[in-house]
Length: 259
Length: 137
Image (tube, rainbow over all chains, first blue to last red; front, top):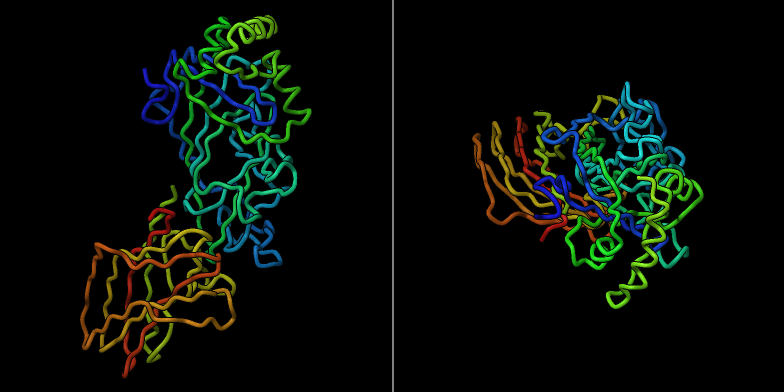
């Protein structure tokens, strides 16, 4: 079985591995179900930029958003204005991808694509914490810097109990109408209960979709969210010749797992 | 991989014998007042390329259409260099699809291009460009 389907999402029965660079740990999940199978696309509409919002410019000063959803030329969304995606009726109406820790069996795999595709994207996890770094903490990166951003598309896992903040940048001089499309899966997941299986996945002997999260700053919000949602902070990676050591460690970790 | 294609459309004012086309697109917001008037120059996103795949030009009289590029399109008065010229020797239209596009690279984040018309007698002139912004070769 392939790790992902034609949309890049994990099929039922497949494995999802989410690596956290800041800790060197990874979460391993088995996808028990995909509740939105066949309905993976959301045409969200324009970026939630209200008219009149002042955005800083790459060339200095600030420029107002002329009409809701239009991103002025040479502007970017600064750290303090990072956006979430509002949606009426969801658990948190200001952030459609946020779910609480007691929904721990649910996990959102979200591929965000923005039009125009040249728009810069980065993400704060949690909201307010910019994660892009170069040479340890020597240099911060992101949409307001020359590098440390994606363009047009970003693939993330939205963990419960954490609000994410998206930032965008438009480094043309064009004032552009924007549009956002999501391709997503609402997984029902569980942590595999076999330490040998986890070892085989984390040594890539068993196929799994790997996603490396842009988490270089592991703050208390993330740590608390992991511990209160899953009971663990992930599984450390071992070398292939460390099976017995790894299995022993994984067995201990699995005793704390809540999902 | 980044790939966005814009159809840019420009129309001369019909009263000037030369000028830069204001450029319109379904993705470009514009208004009649500054700073929201349609752009006459396009700044290429840093690190990407602008590939001009197709041109459709039309005019009610003899017109020269020139695509210019600049190393610093952010300057108040950029130094422009012609990169492509098409001449209509009389009223008419011409559609050009390119198997190999005109490529303009953004190596500093300041490169840009514009499209100009030049006529001996002022008349309406029209241009449409298919421009791709991409990081692909």
